[in-house]
Image (cartoon, rainbow, N blue to C red; front, side, top):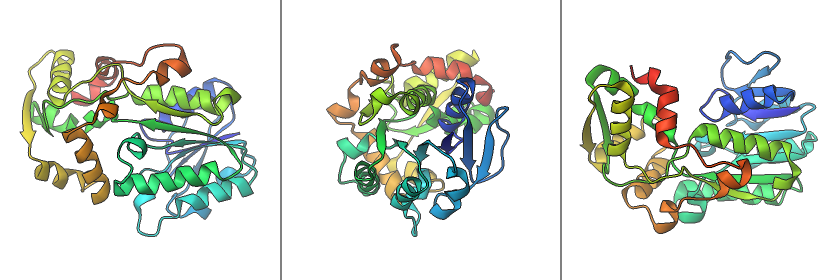
Length: 279
C-alpha cells in the first residue's frame, strides 16, 4: 500500500489516480474529506501534527511526502513524519522538495526543507528527492481575475523560468514509488521552456479565444497577495527567484525525460487541460 499526502492538490490528485490505475492499493491523505478514485482509501490528517498520520501508515510500503505549508507552521516537526514512517514499517519515501534547496540554500524556507532532506537520507529508508521549480498550476491564482476582469496581475512580467506541469511531477513521483532504480535519486524537475508571466497570460488568452490584459504588480503588491496563502519567508524566497533567476534556475533539466522517456509538457498543454478554470 502506498500513502499519498497532499492527495487533493495539483500533484497529489493525479499521483493518486496514476497509482490506482496501476493497480496499487492507495491511501490518500488530506486535511479534509474529499472524493477519491474508486478503491482509494482516504484518511484525514494534518501533517503539522505528525502523529495524526499514524492510521494512514498502517500496512504502508511507501510514502509520498508533500509538506507544503505544514513545513512552515510555528510548531512543525516534519522530520518526525520520517521517523514515524520508519517506525511503522514504511520502506520507501519519495519527498517533494524544492529546486531552491540547491539554488538558494540560504533562503529560510530552503533551510527548513534541506533539514527534511537530510533527515530522510539518514533514516535508513529507501528514498528519492524531487526538486521542482515553479509550477504551471500557480497560474490558477489568476483564474478569478481572468474570469471577472480579463486580467492577469503578476510581478516581473518579462522575467521567465521553466515552469513544470504538476502532472509531470506526479508521473515522476509514481515512477519513483514503484521502481527501485530511482532509489537514492535527486531529480530536478522543470518544464521544456522558459516562459514569462506575460507569455503565460498570452497563452491563456489564446486558449480562451479572447483578450487577457497583463497588469504588472510591484514586489510589495505581490508579496501582500502571496502572504495571504503562504508564510512570509516562503513568499520572499519565491519572489527572490522569480525576480532574478540565476543560471541554474533557468536551465532546462533533463530529469523529467530521463525518468519518463519523454519531454516535459509545455505550459500551453497545461492551459489546454485547465482552461475551464479561466472561463
